[in-house]
Image 1 (cartoon, rainbow, N blue to C red):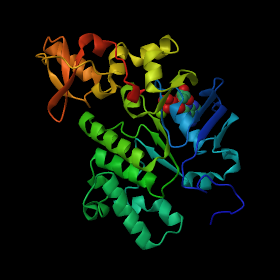
Image 2 (cartoon, helix red, strand yellow; image 1 turned 90 degrees about the horizontal axis):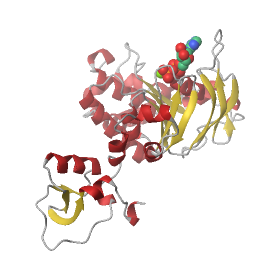
Image 3 (cartoon, rainbow, N blue to C red; image 1 turned 30 degrees about the vertical axis):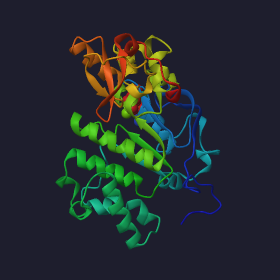
Image 4 (cartoon, helix red, strand yellow; image 1 turned 90 degrees about the vertical axis):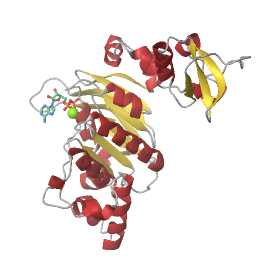
Length: 336
Ligand code: ADP
Ligand code: MG
């Protein structure tokens, strides 16, 4: 089934990098590119969020990777191999693809939807069944038996999106492409599914390109963020901290929003900050555990009109952080 002469993206199940090299797409009949000379490398195992306004070229960039559309010029490489040297079918089998509209087949059960790629790859029934159970557990739909026989129409939007993610992960592809996968979820379900997906990502370490128009989702999910601006131009590519600390231009700054400073404080926990000397007696400040974010601590101190917070561990006070230390966080050696 697989042509042994052809290089594939799934030769190894360890993760691979994705390199955009001057990647440009101009749709037929349009004179301006939808994606304009994008160059960036997504490291093996990294989760990179692609953000930007509607029409900025995010979906275009994603569909170029699995050759749902063709490049006008430039190249994209998976590992060291140009996607033009990998058969489009083979490429799509080795890349998991999850989209907001889920694309589940309504006439197929959950189990049948998840099994599509494994079947094409010729897995036996038992392997498919145990993989399906494993995936349903991974996306938090248990007991698996209860969900497998249902049809997409018998699931909520959030459950359908989880099945879409399970299906994309089914054959354990080294690369995952996700296009606004949580876009249709209500805020509470969305937070749960984001946390689940981050846990999955940490466990399986797949190179992931995650498209969202929501900068807060990108800051939460991304090891790095690429911001595209209208015209399909890359405005900035860096870690959430780099973007929040040093936005490349006014477009990036306004996209990050006026709460940029507070969002940056949400990247650090109290345990990340250098502790002050232990006081002779603990001030009457609000108490928070070390895994609270600096932003939460600042908010709580302000709400209680305190001049700082007391950091606790196992319920016992261990250090203090003044308002000034919260506003100008100095990272401890261990956190740098
Ligand atoms: P995003 O996902 O960031 O909202 P898209 O990649 O979907 O943006 O679209 C980028 C630009 O390309 C838009 O101006 C859009 O209208 C245009 N575009 C997208 N798909 C097509 C197509 N099939 N034919 C012509 N133009 C398209
Ligand atoms: Mg889009």
